Length: 172
Image 1 (spheres, rainbow, N blue to C red):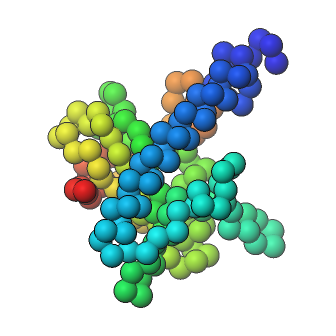
Image 2: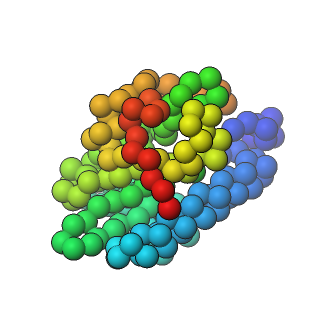
């Protein structure tokens, strides 16, 4: 383990601190978006109310799936919202997240019957400067730029969506 301290992943104190900072950074956006939704008349249940460590799960007999960040309801409608706080790719007008997460969101949507919306906060959008954009996963899948993309320094496969084609601009 000693030689793995500087690696990306679960090994080493430095990585744990960076991971905790990333979680806090992401939670700030989740909280900001949840407050905006409440102002727009939505009722929300943020998942961080249920777990300080790890993601709350949708658990079945033979499987379990991490749920998106926010469960939202208004006027007889219900949806899940996943908040992503990340910058668009440097050399491509695209952004995304881990394929494993996408597969979980699709299963949560299938099991519950409630759509999953993914919103991004991007403070470095080089294309048009739009800071907030997102879409339902069914729509995102119509604009896949690449799947199983391995980013430098990350061991997870990513699914990446083309900007601006895949996204709805969101102003709040």
